[in-house]
Each structure stands twice: as structure tokens, then as C-alpha cells.
Image (cartoon, rainbow, N blue to C red; front, side, top):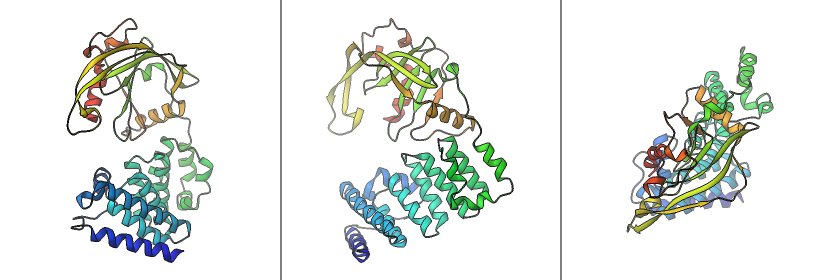
Length: 344
């Protein structure tokens, strides 16, 4: 079985290389620049995008099979070959796990960092793994830094920290007890006043935007036309709860020959508004809200799937519950404009 996996990897690599006109000029798959480039451009211009994605996925599956069979060095080869073609968060995370098993701790730390950079779905776990790798490297300050960041982003497996063999060196430090108590100190609290204004949730592509007006009205950005859903908001048991009432949108007209997403439309016209008949929903859990304020208190920049809070001197006109849009310009919430422009 393992011999088949090895042959599969070698054959795949040979096929890929035979189809490439040239090797990457700087093949440094653990650098942030390489990760960003190969995520955006599968194949990096050497082979078609679709082919690069397909081959990379096949190699990643081969790497996972080798990993599950205990052939960690072979798994490393497969993951490295996959990264030659396409970079994504899951691939980097799996590569980091395999590198840890072969005692390549410095490389593992970088791989987990790249996983977080590309929007790994559990950023707190990626940060925890970085901390574990630094502990294995006997770099206590870095290990503690990333462990703290993991807690700030919602890592709650505190019991694991006390028994994980990867963190043994960190636990041996003379100030560990005090440091651990600081890590598990009560969460940063927030109140109604602190969350009013624009809330930006960073996503891998365009951000989700929500404006909490001072009068209790909520505005949520929807659609390429810059429309909004208006409702009312409240804090309930620490959670942010939204009750939608009205949706106002536009519709695209005309199409470009090329382009994607919102850019495919030439112009927009006002479609209209209609009432929303839905039960109240939890927009953000209290844990996610607290996590956001912990990040803010530390002066760190929010990352994928994390929240940022922006204050404005005055609320948008759409916060008026009696305001009824009549034109496409009327549904454009000024607070949303900068973020949507950056995302396009």
C-alpha cells in the first residue's frame, strides 16, 4: 500500500513537471508571499488553473493517506509537491502536522502560520499549533506569545495545555504558573455602547458588514448594488441578536464580457423594498464578541472570520426607521462604501 502511494506521488510529480515550461523562480512554499501568490494563482502560470487545483488535491489526498499510515516523511513529499501547484489553508495545516511528526519544528511553525494567513477555518487551532512548534524548539517567549494569541481567538481547551507533550518545555519554565493564570483570566467584557457603529467581519474574499445604529436600528449590507437589510438589534445573554424588518436592494443591468462577482454588472438600478418575515436570529455569539474585544485590547489586527469595530461621528440616514429609499443612491450606506470598494 505504501509503495503504491510512493509511486503515485512520484508519477504525479513527473507528470506535473513534464507539463511545466519552467520551475518557480523562487520556490519557498513556506513564505507568506508564496502562499498568497499560489492561493490566488493556482499553477502560477505554469499549467492551467483547473489542472493545478486537481493535481494539488490528488497529491494532498496522497499525503493524508501516507500520514494516516505513519509514513510522515512520505507525507511531507506529497504535501510539498501539492504546494508546488496550489496553496490553501487546509493543505498548509496538514503539512504542518506532518512536519511536526518528523521533528521539523521550525518549518511546522511556518506551515501553521501560513494556514492561518490563508483563512484556516479554526485560526485558534492553527495558532495553538504554532505555539506547540515553538515549544518544541525550546523558544518559550514565542511559544507563550502564540499560545496567548490562540486563547484570544477562542481556544478553550485549557486542560489540553496542561498535558500536551508538545508544550512540555513551556510548562517547565519557572514563571509558567503565573503565565498560565494570566492566559485563563476572565474575558474582556463589552457593553452596548462599545459595539455601536460599524462591525466588519473579515472573510477570505469580501467582508460582511453590519451597522448598529445608536437608536437600536441595525443595517446589514447585502448585494452588489449596495442594498441593506434594516432591523432592530439587542444584546441578549451576551449574544448580538438581530430582528430583520425590511430589505432594500438594487439589480444589475448589462454585463461585461469579462470579470467576476460584482464587477460583471455595468450599472445598477433600484429594485425596491419589501418587508422581511423571519424570526429573530443570533448574529454573533458572545464568545465571538469577547474574542474580538480581546484582539482589540491587545492592539492586534483582526484576521479572517474575526470582527473589527469602527466608530462614526453620526449614524447613516438609513438608521431612521421611517426612511424609505426611492433611488439606487438612497440604499447606499455611506459607512459600507469604503469596505466594499476595497473588496472589489
